[in-house]
Length: 295
Image (cartoon, rainbow, N blue to C red):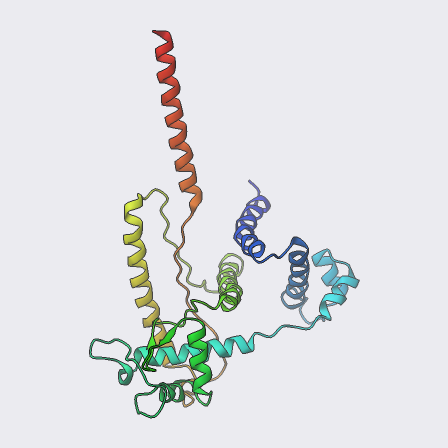
């Protein structure tokens, strides 16, 4: 099989779950086609320049197969900015981080304490001030409540429901993270496949395709526990050098880096297993019927 065919099969596998999400959100092919054109133009503009020469619309047109008129139209579209999303995520995540890791907000059993909103040393407002600067505590609380990371009981005490800022109810936030998280994985794979002159980024996967039903929950629980523990360890180390939370940290450059851990299941093997069982049952019945007819 040629490299082009292998790549086409890989792209189709990537597109299928993406198309599933788009159809669930009533996004037709035409809208996806416009987005694909825009992505082609932006990547050709930024990543396929000729050294020491300005990238021309003619060259972009040649690379992408789009007309120069279409290239010009797409370049004039207003660029979307995710800075607000990133800031909101970072601020909320830092508050949850402090709540989980600062001994001041931990019980003897290392559980996050419930907090009052204001008026005491051990308060949510003080937590926000310490870990998220001058943002209004009420805004942070509203955000964490909205996405299901905290809850407020009948006595107005605030309880942390998750040890990480993982929106449970914020569908729009989860969709936005689809873009940031999946693009991060694909960028890592692009570097590891094509930029061989650079040191490869860490990319590993464990996968088995013939496990019985009764071990799935056990392994899933192990992954949840060990994966969370690993991420918290990495989080603690990275947080030590984060200049948003620690303005006293010096050094050049502004680098964004991270690690993602995710669990997945592939139903295609289960579907094949079911089909194989049905085929065996049918063959057994057919053989049984044939045997009786020969008697």
